[in-house]
Image (cartoon, rainbow, N blue to C red; front, side, top):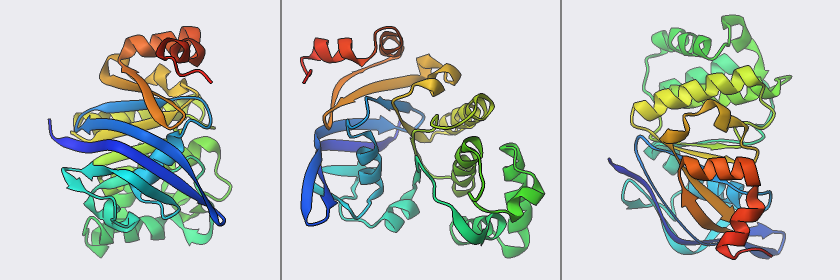
Amino acid sequence: MNNILLIRNLHVAVENGNSKKEIIKGLNLEGHGGEIHLVMGPNGSGKSTLALSIMGHPRYGILDGEIKFENEKINHLSPDERAKRGIFLAFQHPEEVEGVRIIDYLRMLVEKVRKIDRKESYDFVVARAKEVWFREEDLNRYINVGFSGGERKRFEILQAMLLDPKLVILDEPDSGADVDSLSLISLKLREMRESGKGILLITHYGRILQHIEKKRIKVHIMRDGKIVMSGGEELVDRIEKEGFAKIFEECGCNE
């Protein structure tokens, strides 16, 4: 399998006014194409910071360590350069964009990134949108304006489908989404995995686990900016039964 993501001894600080606070504190992670990695942990453990750091958010500065994507060090690349290389991040709370129609935005994406001809982009977007339950008339709505939680999450997945990235990062894909939307998102994630994409899911709810084949995932537990334990489906079962407290007690990382 091809090496998609390699993170070694990563330390990341977040800018807050005139000060910086270190959030990621020596994190290591490795992922390959065709794998689903699930990063779990309680609120404040650094999960979202990890996602934004991989994407290159300017407020999240790397103090030490490295992030490699397809064996290229990307520490100093801008978010748009990382996106061009094939990294996609679906946000936990996607913003509303008043005045910008979905169809106009998505056509621009596929024309600029996928190099799809202007004459073909409309039908291409409409066809893929229907796969995630957006009707043609829905595409005339403004981006995320008045969307339900499930619609927002399905719209994020639609963007990933259209951009066809190599690494898909989803921050809290089960937050605010209804059961039917979660089931559909999981189906699309399975299709992406089967096509060889690397997938990184970040969550603390665990609801999406009910819709993903547990044997297909690798699980990582975060605490205080580090991955303190990794495993497979057996770790998912332990979290469901015992919560995080037992895990933290076992690894000696309780507060």
